Length: 299
Image (cartoon, rainbow, N blue to C red; front, side, top):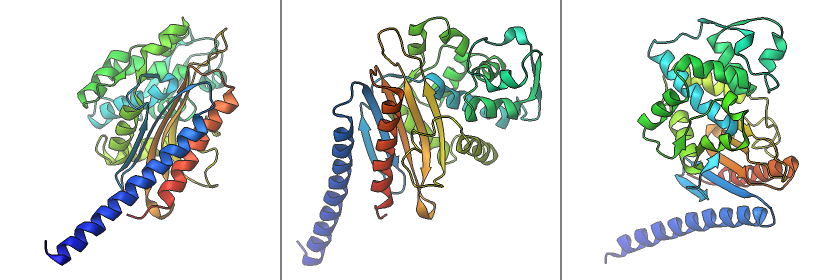
């Protein structure tokens, strides 16, 4: 073999070995963080700049809870891009059509009367504030869970199931498990959105801004990151049943790094007997480990 070629091959091998070793080190650190936790955790991390990928329980089905509002927003904005809906359109909703006794900042603000808001405000309530009534308004507008499911499946994502509304999930504990994703599918969908290959440029910037303004889950992906870090994310949270089991404490998002780069992370906690604080600390700890890994990586 030519000596120059041999040296080049050895350098490439060493670089690849180094990259694999770093990724393996990140996985070991995450595993150590999770080892004593009484919960099932799914993780998917992807760095577009370096093509680094890490999965833990990446193909397992996890209940999404409000994470599915990201999928719903994608379907609605796709309809906007196609001219079937307009962000300026006023949407009227009667009080009788709203879910009572649920998380709904929108309902609290307009309590006692019908609600008339432009579509963009309803999307913002559903995504930024995880409003359950705003979510179901969007579902009725787009054609129900099946329409969202069909949209996601048409994009090529098979490891996602959306079949229940927020009103449905309020009826029984087990219904929430009908809306599931794998961590791998979640991070792949995030990547397609973040790369601008899913929606128009205008809709991509619009939804990114709303997700970056999310007020829920401040102690999850963002919890241990440097102050001022931009995170465009969507959370999901279940209740805790009589056996002390929490079905879902989730967060998926796009995390910006210094210099304009970013990485994608999807973390799902299910079947957990830990406290909400402990569940959120798991997500925050994993996100921080990923931040340290990608902030220290060279392209």
